[in-house]
Image (cartoon, rainbow, N blue to C red; front, side, top):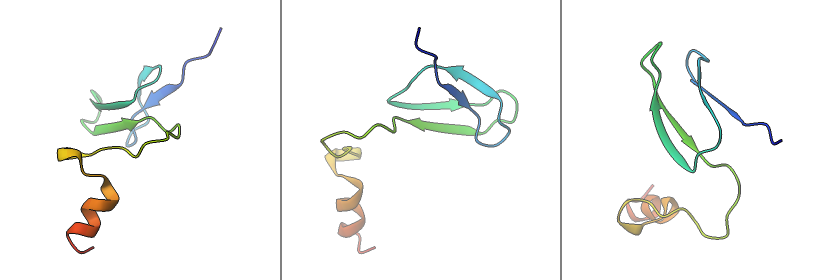
Amino acid sequence: MKELKEIRCGHCNKLLGKGSAHDLEIKCTRCGTLNHVRDTSPCSEPYEGQNGASHAYSAEKIGK
């Protein structure tokens, strides 16, 4: 049986859940930190952000 990955709070290390998530926001009930969990496996297509713009394009567009 495949062991599930632990998802922990980045601030206080409280166990928030077990499993996998593509894109998840979860608030820690202990310290109140809003944690952002994203899938770390590589994919062939870049992640499309708000309005379909990739992060690299968005940064280039605003001159950063």
